[in-house]
Length: 422
Image 1 (tube, rainbow, N blue to C red):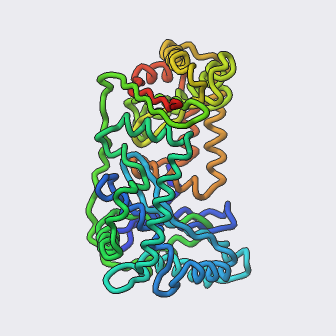
Image 2: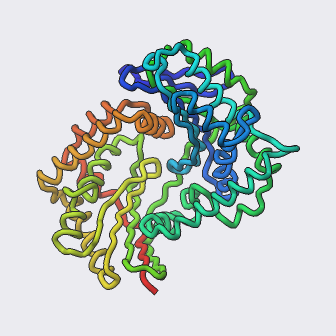
Image 3: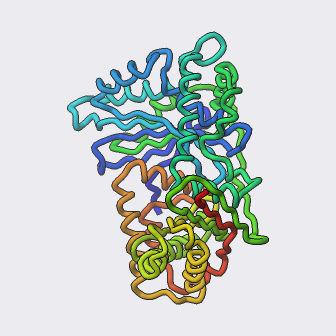
């Protein structure tokens, strides 16, 4: 089948993916630089995009960048860290108005690309490192970002369950690294690290919008002509069997108990059974139609919220509930029963049909977002599969109840994490 994104490597080895479509009035450009998740480099990797987007030699401050973006008809530019399976990925993006809708030739687009390139390849330096003020300020911001997780009990309980479940595995490392590693990072060390990452790590650039594929290739080949010596990073994911279930309790000043149950599914994106796992997760806890919502929250009134979600590149499933402190054991029992029902094939037509419809609707919504289209395609590349959203939808529709029950047999509870009150 014809691929949405046409792939071509730039002369220096960067993969370029271009999807030419007139569906959007914007052109989106994303760059991804891949790192293996590793405790020793996670904090430095997380700090990099935020220091880089503070300024380059041509645009030496955030203010210079903002004023320039306004001149580009309010183009949107940003950077972040994303975690997909056991990869930590540096992301930069710029979204610009399609020149044809603003009565402009390619000048505006070219200027946007030059800003994008300048921030990545020509950062503001001081002596033999990044500008010290920027590094110290961004270290402070990153520290607050990492600490903010502690105050967000909803996400904190999920992250802590993953950490306990995957202890000793790269996946247990938080995407923004750790506060304890920040103080030791100097502007010189970070700059040396940046040069190594830029030169040796796999990189992808995505362009989505109404563009000429050949001209885009020529432009980016010219702009990104930095010398590279790319090293392949292994795409392997640590897969473990559940030897015994773990129970972890943490006590804090909280006004509601947070219960997280981490499951190993033995299936990840790229496997044939992944689409059945998607439907299984939707039946289990993927919305108001699901067993968790209807039985744990509505029928038993045990939870303020109850849902489940997949970590597709690692093959994990997380069920999460907000409960009264004395309801923990009862809630765990009922959550287990919902999964057992699925294993035994006790799935109503309503649950099954609603689950597939909910999945298909969310995939169709993703088709209306350039960022989501790129993110889903990137998931595929990481997991060795290239498919369009339409192909995923087709595979979801083809899943049977028997497929769901069969895949459910592989799902094993690994860790129960409970955030209790002091």
